[in-house]
Structure formats: structure tokens, C-alpha cells
Image (cartoon, rainbow, N blue to C red; front, side, top):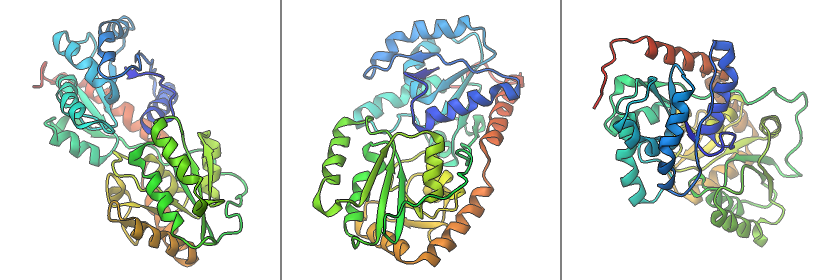
Length: 355
């Protein structure tokens, strides 16, 4: 059970799609059942219909996406589902990108939804720690990270530099916590010939924020220094990774940050704030440059250093690739995912209620 269109281009939705695509190879099938994408808390009104549809499928387990947990929580507490419940978490209880009042309201609803879950699958160690800190039993949480691979590596490396010394890449949907405005401000402080920035991602997630980004891009100090690609296929994103010199995403709150792992697998140094899951993926000065959150001047200095020092880029990129190689591919993640679910379904010792 998820929220809205399951084909949306965000990390959580892509995770589910990759697992669904891999399911037949693991003797399984995933069917998506969605709550309507309406303003909070209106999707909860559809809970009886959504849960009834899930029950009619006669599934061995119901997978509950964390983005829909609050809407199902009260109904699940009132009437336990016929099939065991498995939570698939990409955000902590209370969610992210929400106002403080909504977070306070949503957190207990999320916890209510997870109360009787047989298993909670978290996308990162950071997220597992956050979920446990919110009062969920740590023994019920299993970490299954996203795969590091995007698509087949292009046969030829393209040229993204456009006459500059380096090409930076940012792959992110245009929402405030991704830090795109801060990245543009840092880019504007570099010498004009130092670097060009390529930005890929959905521009429609937050229209008001996107309008601010476009106004900043139109400023004279950024003329010709950034290329906007919009939402791209996995293959086209892979081509950008293969041709870039470094990856930059100054995001404040990332439960995993799939794109950091993908970039590292393409031997790209990663640059961002020392926040969210990035410190779990890379060390400052070893696989990338991690900076104090919000310090735009430090971000600008880091970008200029990478733009002008190709040997540093190479050293950090090689280390990034080595560290990424220790993380699972999508097929390996899928094997962990379905093994964890099967293990939970076979656990007949699970208590009927976990409060």
C-alpha cells in the first residue's frame, strides 16, 4: 500500500518499483494498492476502501509504504489485516518535508500503523536508528539499502564541461531540503571558468520552490553556468554520472540518498553537508568533501578545490568506487528484501500485538 502514483520518480517509489521488478526472480509478486494523493489528512478517508482491496487480493503479506502509514494506522489498529503486515520505511515516523504541527500529528499515527507489523524494512542504518528512537522495537527492524547500480554504463564518456575545468552533477527533485538554491549560490562564487553544473530531477514537486530556483538560475552571475535536464530515465542519468567529474547534493535531511551511492559507484567524489545519511556513506577527505550544514562559503571553497585539482578528484573518486563496491546491487538488495520478508512470515513466535 502506497500513496498516489507508484511510478513517481523519487527514491522511495523507485525502491518499490525495483523490488517489484525483481519479485518474479524470487518467487514473489508485488501488487500496488494506492491511497489517493490528496492533502493531509484526507487520504485517511479512503482507508476502508484501500484496506478492503488489499484484503481481497489474498496476499501472503501486506507491504505498507511509510508515506502512507499515517493514513492506514487508525484503521489497522481497529481491525488487524488478514495478512501479516510488513512496513517498508523510507522516512522516520512523522515524515520529512512537513510542518512541525503535521509532524507532531503524524508521528503517533505512523507508530500506530507499525505497532503490529511483523517486520519493518528500513532503507538505511540512519533511518533504522531514527525509527528505533521513535519507540519502535529495534529487533523488528531490518536494513535493506537501495542498490548502487543505476543502469548499464554508457560505452562512451560524454563531455559535460563546455570549456570549463570540471563538470559537477546534481540529481535531485526540486524541493527545499535538497539544497539546490544553496548549491547555486555556492556555484555563483566560483570563477566563471571553474565549473559548470548539470541538474537532473523533477521540477514539479514544489512549484513555489521551483520558481525560486528558476529565478536564481536566471541571475546574471549564473548565466551559462548551469544546465537543467529535468526528469530523466535511468539510462540518461547513468550517462550523466559517467561524464561528470564530481557529484554535489547539499541535502539537509536524506534518510538514505540513493543518488550519493549511485554517484560513488561511478567513481565520483561526493560533496554535501555533514547531515542526513551522507556521513554513513562517505568520509570527509576520503570519498568526498562533507561540510558544515548551511555553510555556503565552505561549499564554494570545496567546489573550487575539486574544479581545480584533478588529482584530488581522481583520488577521492577511486576511494568512492571502492567503498561503493561493498554495497549491494539492486539484485542483491532484492534478495535481502525478500529473504527478510520470508523470514518474518515464517516466524510463528511473533506476538499478536506489539505495543
